[in-house]
Length: 319
Ligand code: SF4
Ligand SMILES: [Zn+2]
Ligand SMILES: [Zn+2]
Image (cartoon, rainbow, N blue to C red; front, side, top):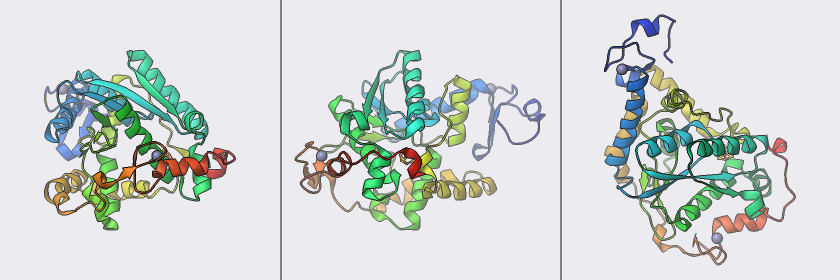
């Protein structure tokens, strides 16, 4: 798990116990053995929860899981730390990718005896992401993001959960911050915190993985024997988010720690300076679902109206 030759493990020692290390974390100038790396992951999640007041003792969490490494890692980390956490899987109807991702989420839950709430866009709401993208003539991630936000919120509120957990890691958050800063999206910058408090029609949303990178969550899954979907979503091609990640990875390579400095520096010294435009508590109620809405129908119900009657679009046509 380290860059370099095969002698690396023999030569490099764990910072804590001096046994052979299995991973190097350049931004911390540290190397860890298996046990101490897993302990490091536990500590980083506990620190994020504590520092940003994400969860309080006795609270119940709903973890949005995709079958990928980040969401399964955070579910595992929360359960092992003693939190009561159920999973939520939303079937997006993205061909084989969705079939495979559902399998990983279900197996993870079944093997550990955990509860997994499932929602299927096509079965429950009459459309899927490729069809919604074709109907709206926008990139698939736009309809997908809108659908997930709405369904995650709804499921967390309906299930009486205290918080909705997502598996966004440090790389994700730094990349989103980079994109928002490049365009000075001040409204988004105002909301880019690892905790968004609950409001009328919205659950509290928390991101307890923000102190771990993508490479660290992948290593965590491998070491904990968590089987996850490695394949990326076929709809992600051309996504600007990936380009921002690459640019930040380049910086990180030259200057380890710059990604964390960028993100945590923003939270500590700049996030307060931005104000969100529309106040969430000023929104009315959607006449169809009762959720928060800027007009008569919320954006999700408008999407359902347009996409549910449309001829299904095969995923291949959207690549
Ligand atoms: S890449 Fe886009 S379409 Fe695919 S799951 Fe993510 S948001 Fe949805
Ligand atoms: Zn050690
Ligand atoms: Zn609605």
